[in-house]
Image (tube, rainbow, N blue to C red; front, side):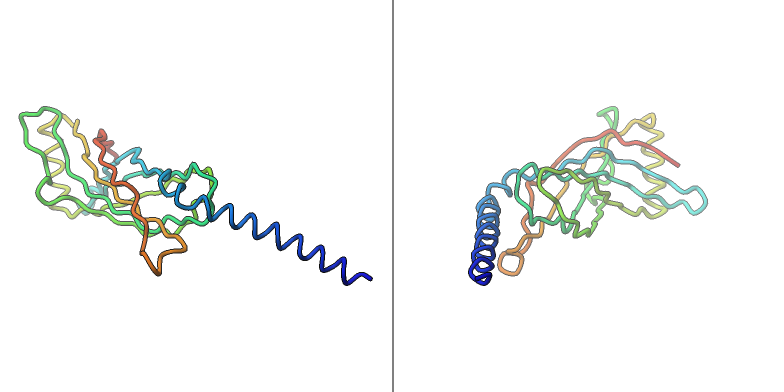
Length: 176
């Protein structure tokens, strides 16, 4: 007598699971259109001892939807500098500074995650930025172009989903 009840309970649980999975799947494509990325800060850190430096960009990726199953895979940042006074030319406009980051961090529903992209600077680049800062009274703007790639269950067939490219001009923060 308990076998039919067990079968009924198992069928009910399976039905609930299938319905929940179907609802999640139906929200997949709308969720892709709602994903957002944003660069909040760009910080230049220099190390006096070896004249090296890094450019650290803080990026926020947001999933405002109810869809679960998204993963932030890779990010790519391209940066050049704009002067405080427009009579000076941009720095690294022709040969942009580039940084990449691979994370593969889940992006749960209705959440934002903060991630960093680090661009390593050679001593020559640090020297150029230092001169540029002194000419522009330590007030320059980082012009950034951000690409974020999201992993989904369709990676094998379609590859990563690319979020809309973000372009932002952000005042450069300095640390040593």
